[in-house]
View 1 (cartoon, rainbow, N blue to C red):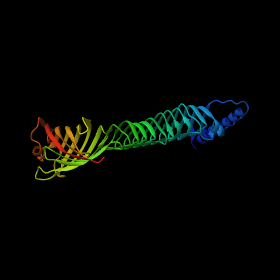
View 2: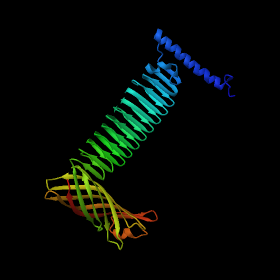
View 3: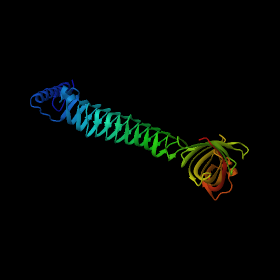
View 4: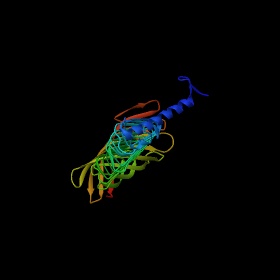
Length: 372
């Protein structure tokens, strides 16, 4: 037999006494509510209906709630804690914290913290969840370890480890994907999808109906531009790929090869650039780019570039471009690939014991065929 050494009463008897007191308090509270209508605004218990509110908890408005497992109420106006879940059928103000989940059926104008998820109707405060925040409309801030889902308004800010989905939202930040209709800013580790974008999109892939500032390698904009282009640089590297973006900003993703050495090197290149329109048939493009050349054997060659080149349009679809580049390169010395590709450095030095780095001037030119 386990004994409560503080009281000298067996533990199981102590638990029964606590439950009996809670149930007795519940009956007394119900009686008082029925006759004198006394409302303490406090609900303490184990789990519904074993609490000071008893079966009346579903119709109660509480300033303070504390439940070891889960609590039920109509409204919360102050503080609510539950070891597992808080369930509020009406409105919630103040602060709610639950080990697993918070559920609010009406309007939530306070803050909710849950170990797993917050399920809300209308929310205006802060929601933090280890896994998921889901709401019909949100006007505040949502932070989730995995996902924020809103069928209507998404509020001021959504931050999620994996994905954010909302109709209208100011800012979305996600580890993988953002999906919205009318947004100001989207930042994602991989893909952004939106209707109208008032600010910027930052991701590997950006898709939108209207967007002036997509920053990514692939940018599909309904009112923007798309083209295929082929270029060659001072090392003899030929790159072909897809260029896409708005009228002002664009991205490029391409692949190619270099035959300068005895063995073919295969190239992969990505770039982000801006367009400066001078006339209907002439503009200047500026871009930052990064490329890797490899024969999938020993050694490596990486290059980052800043490029500025004029672009002349011939007809409606064809453009010819070319201009100077400034390049930073890093490669291993053992394979000898780097020195054979580049031997005219402005500055260079060893990078550690095995690698070499340097800056040099180059040039690039090519043609672009406009698709849209």
